Length: 188
Image: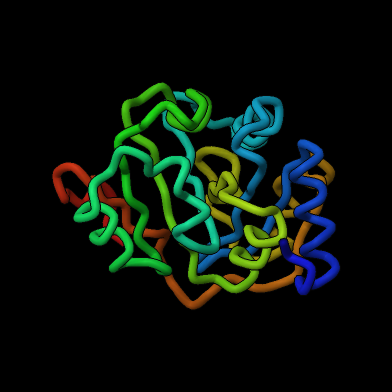
Protein backbone atom coordinates (compact mmCIF):
# COMPACT_ATOMS: atom_id res chain seq x y z
CA UNK A 1 0.00 0.00 0.00
CA UNK A 2 2.10 2.86 -1.29
CA UNK A 3 5.43 1.89 0.26
CA UNK A 4 7.27 2.90 -2.93
CA UNK A 5 5.56 6.30 -3.20
CA UNK A 6 7.44 9.58 -2.85
CA UNK A 7 7.78 10.43 0.87
CA UNK A 8 5.57 13.53 0.48
CA UNK A 9 2.86 11.41 -1.13
CA UNK A 10 3.03 8.94 1.78
CA UNK A 11 2.70 11.89 4.20
CA UNK A 12 -0.32 13.16 2.23
CA UNK A 13 -1.96 9.71 2.35
CA UNK A 14 -1.34 9.57 6.09
CA UNK A 15 -2.94 13.03 6.46
CA UNK A 16 -6.03 11.79 4.55
CA UNK A 17 -6.31 8.71 6.76
CA UNK A 18 -6.28 11.06 9.78
CA UNK A 19 -9.10 13.20 8.33
CA UNK A 20 -7.02 15.82 6.53
CA UNK A 21 -7.58 17.54 3.21
CA UNK A 22 -4.76 17.34 0.67
CA UNK A 23 -4.01 19.10 -2.61
CA UNK A 24 -2.54 17.21 -5.55
CA UNK A 25 -2.22 17.62 -9.31
CA UNK A 26 -4.58 15.88 -11.73
CA UNK A 27 -4.77 15.64 -15.51
CA UNK A 28 -5.94 19.26 -15.98
CA UNK A 29 -6.06 21.11 -12.63
CA UNK A 30 -5.00 20.82 -9.01
CA UNK A 31 -7.45 18.88 -6.91
CA UNK A 32 -8.53 18.72 -3.30
CA UNK A 33 -8.95 15.29 -1.83
CA UNK A 34 -9.86 13.48 1.34
CA UNK A 35 -11.15 10.20 2.69
CA UNK A 36 -14.68 9.81 1.28
CA UNK A 37 -15.72 7.88 4.41
CA UNK A 38 -14.75 10.70 6.78
CA UNK A 39 -17.74 13.05 6.98
CA UNK A 40 -15.78 15.78 8.75
CA UNK A 41 -13.09 15.76 6.03
CA UNK A 42 -15.69 15.86 3.23
CA UNK A 43 -17.45 18.74 4.99
CA UNK A 44 -14.12 20.55 5.22
CA UNK A 45 -13.56 20.17 1.46
CA UNK A 46 -17.04 21.55 0.81
CA UNK A 47 -16.41 24.47 3.19
CA UNK A 48 -13.01 25.29 1.66
CA UNK A 49 -14.58 25.38 -1.80
CA UNK A 50 -17.75 27.09 -0.57
CA UNK A 51 -19.46 24.37 -2.60
CA UNK A 52 -23.15 23.54 -2.41
CA UNK A 53 -23.37 20.03 -0.89
CA UNK A 54 -26.15 19.16 -3.35
CA UNK A 55 -23.65 19.18 -6.22
CA UNK A 56 -21.87 16.04 -5.03
CA UNK A 57 -18.21 15.15 -5.48
CA UNK A 58 -16.14 12.86 -7.66
CA UNK A 59 -14.26 9.84 -6.33
CA UNK A 60 -11.02 8.94 -8.08
CA UNK A 61 -8.88 5.86 -7.75
CA UNK A 62 -5.65 4.49 -9.15
CA UNK A 63 -7.32 1.36 -10.48
CA UNK A 64 -10.75 -0.06 -11.16
CA UNK A 65 -10.52 -2.60 -8.31
CA UNK A 66 -10.40 0.27 -5.80
CA UNK A 67 -13.87 1.36 -6.95
CA UNK A 68 -15.37 -2.11 -6.50
CA UNK A 69 -17.40 -1.25 -3.36
CA UNK A 70 -19.20 1.45 -5.38
CA UNK A 71 -19.75 -0.79 -8.41
CA UNK A 72 -21.57 -3.67 -6.71
CA UNK A 73 -24.79 -4.29 -8.55
CA UNK A 74 -23.49 -3.21 -11.97
CA UNK A 75 -23.50 -5.79 -14.74
CA UNK A 76 -20.45 -6.86 -16.72
CA UNK A 77 -21.39 -4.78 -19.76
CA UNK A 78 -21.60 -1.55 -17.72
CA UNK A 79 -18.27 -2.30 -16.08
CA UNK A 80 -16.64 -2.97 -19.44
CA UNK A 81 -17.98 0.31 -20.79
CA UNK A 82 -16.30 2.25 -17.98
CA UNK A 83 -13.11 0.19 -18.07
CA UNK A 84 -12.69 0.99 -21.77
CA UNK A 85 -12.22 4.68 -20.87
CA UNK A 86 -9.94 4.19 -17.84
CA UNK A 87 -7.47 5.19 -16.76
CA UNK A 88 -8.28 8.50 -18.33
CA UNK A 89 -10.24 11.72 -18.30
CA UNK A 90 -13.76 10.27 -18.25
CA UNK A 91 -15.87 10.41 -15.10
CA UNK A 92 -18.90 8.13 -15.03
CA UNK A 93 -22.12 8.75 -13.14
CA UNK A 94 -23.12 5.33 -11.84
CA UNK A 95 -26.22 4.34 -9.89
CA UNK A 96 -25.54 4.85 -6.18
CA UNK A 97 -25.60 1.49 -4.43
CA UNK A 98 -25.69 3.10 -0.99
CA UNK A 99 -21.97 2.71 -0.27
CA UNK A 100 -21.12 6.44 -0.56
CA UNK A 101 -22.40 9.06 1.85
CA UNK A 102 -24.92 11.70 0.83
CA UNK A 103 -22.11 14.25 1.25
CA UNK A 104 -20.33 12.57 -1.67
CA UNK A 105 -23.38 11.87 -3.83
CA UNK A 106 -25.00 15.22 -3.11
CA UNK A 107 -28.08 13.23 -2.07
CA UNK A 108 -28.61 12.13 -5.65
CA UNK A 109 -29.17 8.63 -6.96
CA UNK A 110 -25.82 8.64 -8.74
CA UNK A 111 -22.15 8.67 -7.83
CA UNK A 112 -19.32 10.14 -9.95
CA UNK A 113 -16.31 7.81 -10.40
CA UNK A 114 -13.03 7.97 -12.31
CA UNK A 115 -9.78 6.04 -12.58
CA UNK A 116 -7.07 8.65 -12.93
CA UNK A 117 -4.25 8.59 -15.44
CA UNK A 118 -2.20 11.19 -13.54
CA UNK A 119 0.84 9.59 -11.88
CA UNK A 120 0.72 11.71 -8.70
CA UNK A 121 -3.03 11.30 -8.18
CA UNK A 122 -2.67 7.56 -8.82
CA UNK A 123 0.28 7.29 -6.43
CA UNK A 124 -1.70 9.13 -3.77
CA UNK A 125 -4.67 6.78 -4.22
CA UNK A 126 -2.34 3.77 -3.95
CA UNK A 127 -0.65 5.18 -0.85
CA UNK A 128 -4.05 5.97 0.69
CA UNK A 129 -5.28 2.49 -0.19
CA UNK A 130 -8.43 3.30 -2.11
CA UNK A 131 -10.70 5.81 -3.76
CA UNK A 132 -10.53 9.41 -2.61
CA UNK A 133 -12.62 12.52 -3.03
CA UNK A 134 -11.37 14.63 -5.92
CA UNK A 135 -12.64 18.09 -6.70
CA UNK A 136 -10.99 21.04 -8.41
CA UNK A 137 -8.87 23.20 -6.11
CA UNK A 138 -10.74 26.49 -6.21
CA UNK A 139 -13.37 28.32 -4.22
CA UNK A 140 -16.74 28.33 -5.97
CA UNK A 141 -16.87 30.80 -8.90
CA UNK A 142 -13.07 31.23 -9.10
CA UNK A 143 -10.91 29.52 -11.75
CA UNK A 144 -9.48 26.10 -10.86
CA UNK A 145 -5.85 26.23 -9.80
CA UNK A 146 -3.36 24.98 -12.37
CA UNK A 147 -0.26 25.82 -10.32
CA UNK A 148 0.70 24.97 -6.76
CA UNK A 149 1.10 28.62 -5.79
CA UNK A 150 -2.52 29.26 -6.85
CA UNK A 151 -3.78 26.43 -4.61
CA UNK A 152 -1.79 27.81 -1.68
CA UNK A 153 -3.12 31.31 -2.33
CA UNK A 154 -6.70 29.98 -2.32
CA UNK A 155 -6.48 27.73 0.72
CA UNK A 156 -3.24 28.29 2.67
CA UNK A 157 -3.29 26.29 5.90
CA UNK A 158 -6.84 25.05 5.24
CA UNK A 159 -5.15 22.25 3.31
CA UNK A 160 -3.23 19.84 5.53
CA UNK A 161 -0.72 18.70 2.92
CA UNK A 162 0.37 19.63 -0.60
CA UNK A 163 1.91 16.90 -2.75
CA UNK A 164 4.70 17.52 -5.23
CA UNK A 165 3.95 17.51 -8.95
CA UNK A 166 2.41 19.39 -11.84
CA UNK A 167 -0.90 19.14 -13.61
CA UNK A 168 -1.11 17.11 -16.79
CA UNK A 169 -1.44 18.46 -20.30
CA UNK A 170 -5.25 18.43 -20.54
CA UNK A 171 -6.87 21.82 -20.97
CA UNK A 172 -10.31 20.84 -19.70
CA UNK A 173 -11.62 18.91 -16.68
CA UNK A 174 -12.72 15.32 -17.16
CA UNK A 175 -15.71 14.56 -19.31
CA UNK A 176 -18.71 13.35 -17.30
CA UNK A 177 -20.96 10.66 -18.77
CA UNK A 178 -24.10 9.05 -17.41
CA UNK A 179 -23.66 5.28 -17.37
CA UNK A 180 -27.41 4.59 -17.61
CA UNK A 181 -28.11 6.79 -20.62
CA UNK A 182 -24.67 7.29 -22.20
CA UNK A 183 -25.35 11.04 -22.27
CA UNK A 184 -22.42 13.42 -21.93
CA UNK A 185 -23.26 15.57 -18.90
CA UNK A 186 -20.09 17.69 -19.14
CA UNK A 187 -17.87 17.70 -22.26
CA UNK A 188 -14.21 17.03 -21.65
